[in-house]
Length: 91
Image (tube, rainbow, N blue to C red; front, side):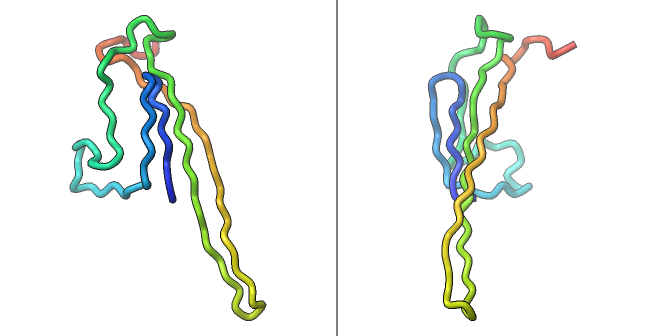
């Protein structure tokens, strides 16, 4: 993955280079791609922050025997919600 753009639903947008998670990181906040909500989602629809993540992958390819090469880029967007801490979950 070449990049991820996070629209966090609270007005914050974060762009990251797509660093890899390793199990030794546990639940620590990412050093280059973290976010902490400063305000609750109280009063928002469903008491949730609604955001969007857009990921881009860039792949280089080559076909030496044909003397050809190029780059392909694919972008995918996914919506997400972040439930307000302390609110009841879905029933």
